[in-house]
Length: 166
Length: 166
Image 1: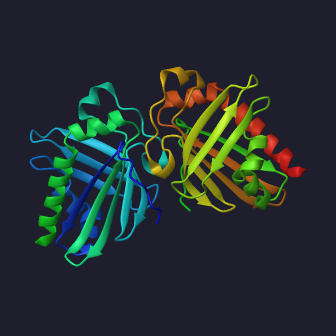
Image 2: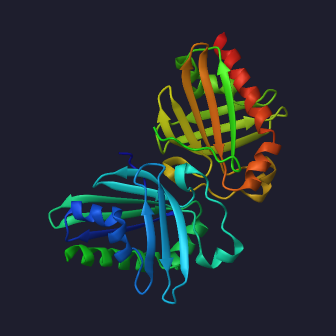
Image 3: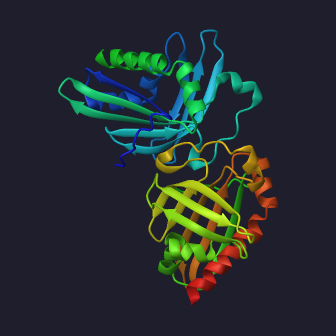
C-alpha cells in the first residue's frame, strides 16, 4: 500500500475514532444501501449510487437537496484495498476516462477537482478513520474548506457511526 | 486486466505491428534512457524524464522544441502490468493528486485532459501495439486529432521500432 504524504497547503485531513469494528466500517463505505443512509449531511440525502469496486471502476452518486433537486456526480475508484483503503477521484470517470468539464449551469454545485483517500485501521476502541483529501491548488483547497469540508465530512462520519451501531 | 471499451466519439486509437519482441518494447516504454530517444517526433526531443512505475506513480517528461524551449509535463500512472499494459493520465500528478489547471501562458502548449492505455501483445511478427487515448469531450478529442495525434504518435512508434531494432 502506497504511503501518500500530506501536503498541508493542498490537503484537508479528517481523523476520527469510531466505536465500530473495521469490517462494519468497510461495509458502510462500500455497500450502496448503507451509503445512501449516511453519505450526505441530513437533510440532504443520497437518492442513488453505484459503486464498481475496482481500480478504474465508477463511483456514481446522486445527492438530493431538501427540495428534491438532484445533483449527480461521477468519479472513479483508484484503490480498493478491502478493510484498509478506498481511494477515488473526481477528475476521472469510469475506466479512467477524464471527467468532462463542469457546465456553467452546474457551477453552483461547486464541483471540485479532488482525490480522496479513506483509510481505516483496527484500534482497541474500534476503527481509526482517516480521510485525506487532495487538491491541485491552494485556491481549490480553500474553496473546499469554505464549503464546509470539516463540518460536512464530520457530520457524515457521525451519521455513519450511528448507522453502524444499530 | 480490465477491458476498456472504445468510444468512437471520444477516443483515438492507433494500432501497429512492430518487428521486435514484447520484452524489448516494454523496455522501450519504461526505461528513461530509451524513452528519451523516441518519445517525441524529431526534431523535437525529450530532455528529461522520470517514471515511477506503479499505480499512483509520477510520469514526468520535459519535451524540447528545436529552439531548445522546454515543455515540462507531469502525469500519473494508473496501471503498470509488465509486458502487457501501461496506462497513465494527464489529469493527475504523483500519488493521484489532481493536476493544477494549466496557466494561461502555457495554453499554447495545448495541454489536454487525456488518459492513455498502451497495450502490447506477442504476435508471430513481434509485437501488436495499441494506443487507446481517451478524452472527456468530443471537442478535446477533435483538438487532439487536429494537433496531429496520428502523425505524431505514428512517428514516435516508428522511432521506437527503429531504436529497438538496433
